Amino acid sequence: MKKIIIINGPNLNLLGKREPDIYGSLTFIEFFETIKLKYPSVTLEHFQSNIEGEIIDKIQEAGFSFDGIILNAAAYTHTSVGIGDAVAAIETPVVEVHISNTFKREEFRHHSYIAPNAKGVIVGFGLQSYELAVTSFI
Ligand code: DQA
Image (cartoon, rainbow, N blue to C red; front, side, top):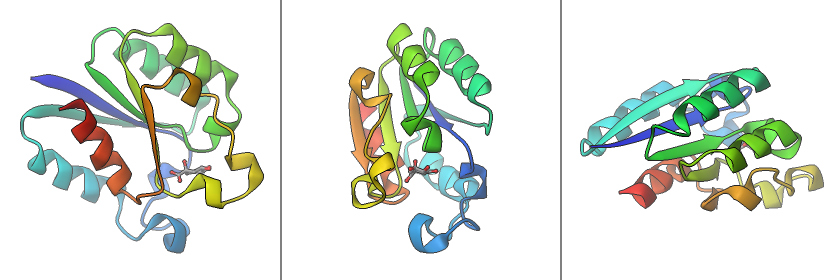
């Protein structure tokens, strides 16, 4: 069975409550339970942290043992050389995802430190961005 982990960065623990016009009204856990049931052929794990170093630790840990990483580094996407370097350092392919279409938003959201080392990028499909990333690994 393929092992895939979704790693979510800062403020994504507030999904469902946070700016629902941009990020929707479902909590991540509600959504995660539905995709786990929908794709029983893969082992899906989920990790969230608001702390940059914890995200780097998790990328390093999963990066030599999982078959895929789905990474929404949230605001750190646009700021973190360290997370970009972690993605470059590991063996596991990383799909970068964003819920909102970051290219339709402020200029500072247009740049990603992750994209140059990602297998691919999925942007702007709401929570379905994560599901499209899961199917890319199947
Ligand atoms: C986000 C987009 C980022 O610009 C923002 O900082 C987030 C969420 C998204 O999924 O749309 O927190 O990564």
